[in-house]
Length: 218
Length: 288
Image 1 (spheres, rainbow over the protein chains, first blue to last red):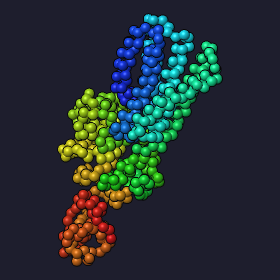
Image 2 (image 1 turned 90 degrees about the vertical axis):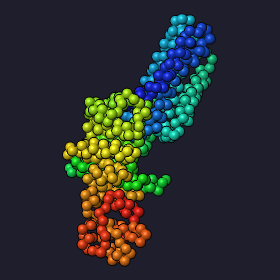
Image 3 (image 1 turned 180 degrees about the vertical axis):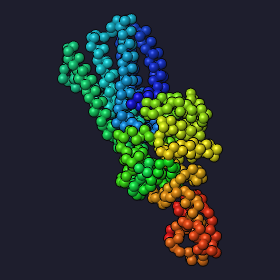
Image 4 (image 1 turned 45 degrees about the vertical axis):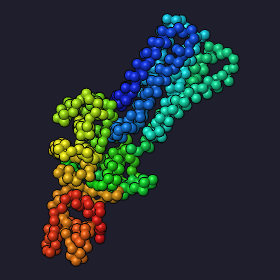
């Protein structure tokens, strides 16, 4: 697995370096700005969490430009491990995004105070970022292995929009269940429910993707 | 256990393209090089795909080191080195990064040996692979395939696209590799001159079917081509003819035993032949 992680890391590295630069520049700007209107910091948190994840899964496409995807099947790793390494890499890059988002909001609050009405709003922003990323990955991998490299771009767009759509759907469902102002407890439970749904779909997507990948021929 | 690789009645069909790999059987003994010959689209890469499990076979058996290799048999894949034609590795890597990835994939990855090949082949370690020439990428792939101490090398058109000098260098590397008696090479190529230099056995497939598998020396020293006129051709025993091809007024007849043909057909010119000519006669000629 060590070699697979290194492989995925190198595939993601160039994009991640560029995105890190952008995230740092935007982060400095967002932190420096007054956060009385919190839309900038909200946008920043979602951008870094989803952005690092998106870059990670988009990097798979690079393997199809050469015979490496086929070559990898001839080295001493199982197909299952190849697929799992992609999922694990996405989680690692999501964690990087979470760190960026956490540092960003922490610095913004330290400099300008808490811009949100309720502390649970920050928690819910993390739920949105993590949830969208997890659903995006859960949709992307089986479709990618099923649809092939040549449809990579459309699968990526469908996965991102799908992730956002599922989170919006869950939010609507929660709003229907709890009309009016939600208590802190209800908000936290709703967030945990959304994260659990994301984690469950991500987990279910692993064996599904493995199954599709094992039937694939190169 | 005599053979490092054994194929028995290997079949694979692609309904959408009408291509069928039909009952391919051959074996590769330890300590030898088998030249796997066929025109483009003959089924060489499909066969190799079935051997390496990158393609699912429809039927038949493929035994590597005496065992059928499944997805979980990583210990078998530790002993195999593979080189494909073209770009084997991502172009955005450097050779140094390739080495780090390989070290994490192969238990027996030998960094010192890889470094030695890089120096011998004069390949820059820090340069991105996409900036390598075609010859350099092939050398790198061969270096990577050899640096985990494999016993079996599977080379799919690994010398195509290289100039003759570079090809000769690579053939020397292959010959050195099989000096170890438990090492073998399956060398797929349509450059028959390479195979004549290094192969111990030649297996020829055409349109997905096995046409011939024989020791190379038999093909080069025993097989022959009779240059017949029409009347001479009519007098030739049908059972002596492996294949024949009409060329203007001459008919070239491939026979399995040149000496016997010279003795039997005294008025016919019998020439030594090459793997290339045998391949052409078998592929484009007619059978009796």
